[in-house]
Amino acid sequence: MVKIWESQDDFNRSLEKALGGNRIEQGKFREAVLSTQKMDFREAITSDVLAPYFNTAIQPAFEDSYAEYPQVWSKFATSELLNDFRPTQFFSLEPDSSVLLRDNGGAVAPDQTLPVVPELTPYPTFGWKAGGKWIDTGKNGARVQFSWEAFVNDQWSIIEQFPDEAARLAARTIDAAVFGLLWSLNSGAPGFNTSNINDANGTVLKARAADGALIAQAVPKNAPLSYDSIKAALQQVAETLVDGRPVTVPSFVLIVPPALENIANMVINTRTIERQVGDYKYVEENGLAARIEVVVSDLPAILGGATQGQTNWVLVPAGGRTSSRRTLVRTALRGYDQPELRVKMAGGNYIGGGTVPYTEGSFDNDDGEARVRLTTGAGILNYDGIVASTGLGV
Image (cartoon, rainbow, N blue to C red; front, side, top):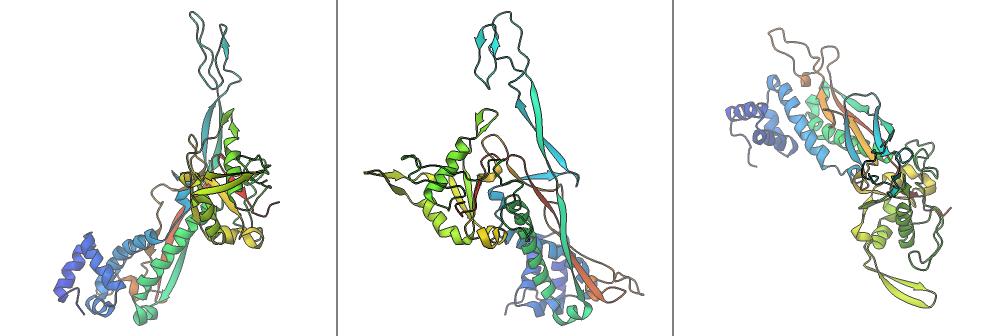
């Protein structure tokens, strides 16, 4: 077995550089802690330098672990950093056609364009109406308590296990906050978040009759996932008007539970579709793959519950944006958008001088504590381009 440090002096020099911010030396320590060479590291390190090293090394290790855990929220939501925990209102300014004179001097301009201004005629008044959504962010976290005996018996399992588990929980927490805009986070009332997914907002897949061209077979409301139901959802978005203008979405994300992964990939990625209208058969090029990315998560299965967890699916604008407006937003406190891991220093001081390190236990009861803190939240700014289906066909 090759040793990382050749001597105590070599170790001390490496530690000093690591504490000074040298990433290469910090990497050596992380490798020692997380590899099979724990004994070499444990024999080399001394209690008077453990506390500052622990604080320095554990955060980079935690950040690495956090980055390794897959998060899908950024596939269908933007990020917004807020200055504090108070609700923040986002305004959207839309032209108010009711006060904008269309007929000026006998020249009529189309809606959503600037009016014509004939010679020596006054400029029409251009008004605005303000609307908006309120979004905020919150604080999440947890702590774990260890005894001094635990440090003595299995010292480095703390570095190996707690940061990794905290990273997993942090990544999961952010995903759940954004998914909670579409699905209910209340385990007692599983299914869609009815505050956002409802008929009034136009976010539920509507029934659509077969038309012999776009839709080969009739699609019921909340239809199961299929080629026709996806085409119906896209058409529903295309027919949606906001202030008289059609909603345009460059690309979409199709969110499905694991049970629908295979059929979703088949529907989206199959190159050609054979269609039949009456006695006439033809082959249609499937262009869905160019516009839709399949995102699979277990959260739709869990949050959907026993009734719809295996069948529900949602089509949302990719990246949380239509061509002109934002839709879903993940929020965090500015400067605190990443998880933070810290330890509690409550050991007091040695009689001979010097602070008692974290691993020697607290002054009161020989315990040690580590804590993870995360600020996150989510909100909907606009419902444009969102179509959800329970997949139950009713």
